[in-house]
Image 1: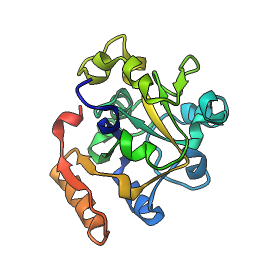
Image 2: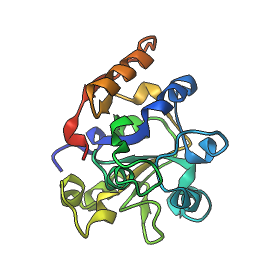
Image 3: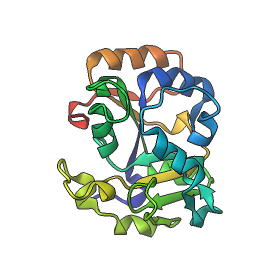
Length: 206
């Protein structure tokens, strides 16, 4: 890998309309917590339910996947593609309002909470989970870094999971689809003591 494990960037996607609540909460909560609320959901509801009640992470006290905050190891993820295609019930082309919240593995493991590395989509039953950084070496980095990944969707969708909550203070960058959304983000965070960089990143989108 080009980067040291602790420097490896990780990416969480959410709709910009959810950012106000993220700021009010001081960070990102797991789906298990958010299921009690009414956020703007951007993924497949049936897969979210599977993560909440069927797929466990054996290396982390057998917690359900939905009890973790999920991150990908790349922007422009397969999930963003399928959301933008309208496959999850949102309008076709909806990626414009989705932002990438960026941190790194070191910030996550430094929290002292349970964490895990999945070798593929954590919402799939055949995925394996690991609680050691050496597992990063076993990920399919060619797929993760590829711009086309036909036949490798599962591998490209590998995740870093952090138990329950990920603090706003650990978000280092916010990548946006266009200048308008970037301005929305800048306005939302303008009174925050911690202000990640806000960038328009067209190559992170479809």
